[in-house]
Length: 446
Ligand SMILES: [Zn+2]
Image (cartoon, rainbow, N blue to C red; front, side, top):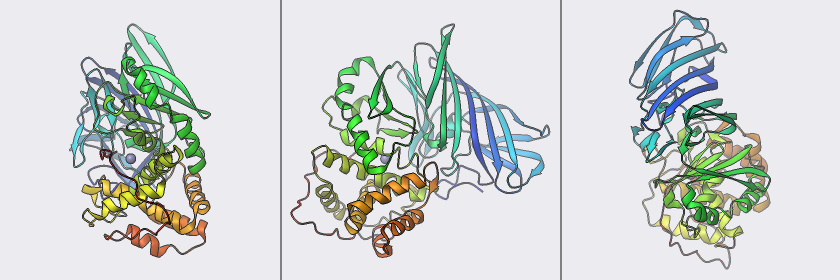
C-alpha cells in the first residue's frame, strides 16, 4: 500500500496529490507551527480510504470535500482517512487538514530528517522521508505536485520556500507567498528561515538569489562568484535550466552537508570559506536541479540517477574551470573505489546504503564509461534528451538505458549491466596521456 520499497513507512499508492495549498503560521521564538493544508488529489484505484503522512504534529480537523461523514485517525505517523463512499480510479478528492505543534526532525535510517530549528531560524532537509514533519503529504518520490505556500512569521526573518510571489508586513509579522509551479517531489519542498540578507544575481539569464548572514557577505561573494559561469556550462551540457529561478541559502549554523531543494540549495556556514574550497559542492547542488529535481526518481532504489550525474557535474565543472579533467578525476576515483569493498550494486543498493559515497562515485563513473563508449556528442545528446523528455517526471534506470540506446543507436546492455547491475567494479577504458588527478580534499557526502 505504501509508496516505495525503500521507505515502506511512508506514502500511499492509492492516490496522488496534484496540488498542495499550505497556509502556515510559524513562530521562530517558540518553534510553534500552525497550519492548514488543502490537498487536491486524484484516486489511482478504487478505494474507500487513503492515508497521509504526518509526523510529530497534531491534526485537529480533517475535512473531505463533499463527504461530511469521512472519518480520520492519526496512528504511527499516518493520518488515515475513511471515506463514506468509494472513489473510482480517476476521481478527484479534496482534503483539508488543520494541524499544529512544535515541528522537529524525525529519526530515520538516514539520520534525522525534516523540519529543524536552527540557532535563530529553521531549515527543512527532508530527503528522503522528512516532509511529513511540517505538512501532511503523500510522501513518496514519484508523487510530484505543484504547491502554493503562505508563511507568516516574525517580521525580522527572511523566508525562502519556493518561487517568491510577494510578501506583506503587518503588526510585527510578515506573510510570504511562494509557489512551485512545476511538479515537485515532497522531499524537495523546503522552508528556510533566518536573519538573512538577500542579494540578486544574474545567472547567465536565470534569476538568481543568495540569502546569507550579513557577516558572511565577503566569503559568500567570493565562493559563489563562479555560479553564473557554472550555469552557462551546465546549460550547455544538460540543456536549459529547468526552473524559473535558482536560490542559494547559506545558514549561520554549520550543517552536516549542503542539500538541494526545488530551485534552491542550502549550505552551512562551514561550507563557505571565501577560498572556494568546496566549489565542487556548489556545482553538485546546482546540477541536482536537472538531475533529481526536474527529472526525479520514481523509486529510491534508482537514486544513482540523481547522484551519479550530480557527482559527474562536479568533474565537468572542474575541467571547464581549468582544474583537473574529467578523465583524470575518473581515474582517481576509480582507483579509490577499487580499494573499497565491492559489494554495492548501484541500480539497487538497498535502503541503508542509498546515500553511500561509493554509489555517487560509481554512478559518475558509469556515466563517464558511457561517454567513452558513445563519444562526447552522443553522450551530451543523451543527457539533454533526458532532461528535456522527462522534465517534471519521475523516472527509472530502465528509462535511462532505453534512452541511451535510442540516442546512440547502440546496444549498451553489456556496459550498463557491468556498471549498474554487478558488484564488481569494471575497468575504465584507457585514454592515452591522462594520469589520475591527485585527490586530497576531504570526502563529504551530499
Ligand atoms: Zn547529491
